[in-house]
Length: 360
Ligand SMILES: *[C@@H]1O[C@H](CO)[C@@H](O)[C@H](O)[C@H]1NC(C)=O
Ligand SMILES: *[C@@H]1O[C@H](CO)[C@@H](O)[C@H](O)[C@H]1NC(C)=O
Ligand SMILES: *[C@@H]1O[C@H](CO)[C@@H](O)[C@H](O)[C@H]1NC(C)=O
Ligand SMILES: *[C@@H]1O[C@H](CO)[C@@H](O)[C@H](O)[C@H]1NC(C)=O
Ligand SMILES: *[C@@H]1O[C@H](CO)[C@@H](O)[C@H](O)[C@H]1NC(C)=O
Ligand SMILES: *[C@@H]1O[C@H](CO)[C@@H](O)[C@H](O)[C@H]1NC(C)=O
Ligand SMILES: *[C@@H]1O[C@H](CO)[C@@H](O)[C@H](O)[C@H]1NC(C)=O
Ligand SMILES: *[C@@H]1O[C@H](CO)[C@@H](O)[C@H](O)[C@H]1NC(C)=O
Ligand SMILES: *[C@@H]1O[C@H](CO)[C@@H](O)[C@H](O)[C@H]1NC(C)=O
Image 1 (cartoon, protein in one colour):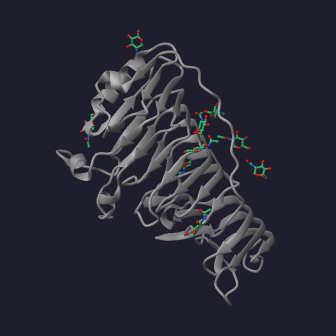
Image 2: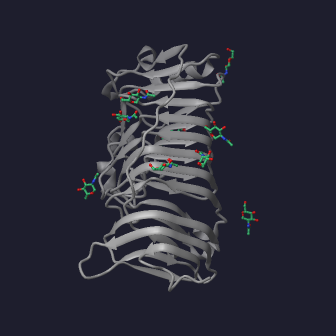
Image 3: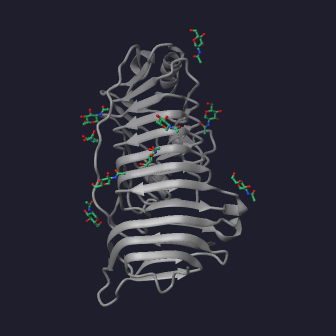
């Protein structure tokens, strides 16, 4: 049961873009030279693994190339490090596709942590997805909302990662999951899945620090970005979110877990047609304490008249600061309002006002 959560339903201002440094390349390894078919039907997983092994062994700055002409079907493919080089590049120019649901399930048990591609323990990785795409072909999986479903790409225990210009569509479950990574910049990432596709989070981040997601568009059926337990120093800047459930911290404290999330900055983001804007979700029995949260500069319309909801458990939320907020309700004759319970903090220049329900 979600007992204490804070949410705001809104629009903000549009995205900004930044330039990306061009990488210098030495040796490159093209998956076609390692037996890939690139015909969209043959399983190219083994070719990817062989090409990756060469890439990862190389001492200078190697590049794994997935070329533009091909459509590469892979599944359960782990690109494992650590590698010899301090910088490793992946150039995704072609298309990577998941197998059909039936083909994927043949002879194996799918779990929620199954994946198309896992990148594990690779440091100094730069992924350039210019011209490329990954399609998770999720529609057959979405029909069963309670069945285990794989995700598209999982970065696990990778430090100093850069991912730029990558498009991912239709994951059976989360599109990009980032676990136990330190230092990553994701920029100009485009993620698309239907607004009614279940659990198709854009990014799911867990146990990671110093992560930036910037100048990206995320349109899916669940959280655009979910920032889970063990995360710190996470910046989300210039993200267009919607449809989707918004940008969320949590859920924290599931089954009594001692989850900590600190130093999350969500700035210059746009929420369009999302279920929530920015929210924090905690389970009551986790004893999770919410404090020092600033909501500033939210402007737009809310589909519900309850535009700001600071619903804290009896242990309270502290130092909640609301400033420069203007949200109007799109329901005729039902003005926007703010609701709080057990919330302590201040509200200035905020419409709807929360000053009658926020405690000192
Ligand atoms: C690193 O390079 C050495 C020498 O070429 C090679 O023996 C070793 O397997 C490489 N290590 C990895 C992790 O690829
Ligand atoms: C995935 O590949 C690993 C080997 O890398 C294997 O042990 C595992 O059974 C495979 N899982 C699925 C679901 O195919
Ligand atoms: C990203 O894509 C744009 C447009 O295709 C291209 O101009 C830019 O160079 C790409 N960035 C990188 C790092 O390749
Ligand atoms: C971002 O990626 C899209 C394609 O996915 C491309 O058209 C656009 O030019 C890229 N923008 C930048 C700033 O690289
Ligand atoms: C954060 O990550 C960036 C990019 O990976 C890296 O350059 C920087 O050194 C990291 N900062 C800290 C404090 O770890
Ligand atoms: C996040 O933003 C802060 C303030 O602008 C900056 O100091 C920090 O380096 C950024 N961290 C990342 C991971 O981008
Ligand atoms: C919860 O985790 C934090 C950070 O790791 C730690 O400081 C704190 O002591 C833990 N609390 C409990 C009750 O385990
Ligand atoms: C957000 O946008 C404002 C106005 O365009 C800009 O001045 C500011 O630097 C941006 N902040 C970040 C963190 O990108
Ligand atoms: C915002 O959402 C509405 C309703 O779904 C849609 O019609 C509109 O195209 C979206 N705007 C943008 C900029 O995507």
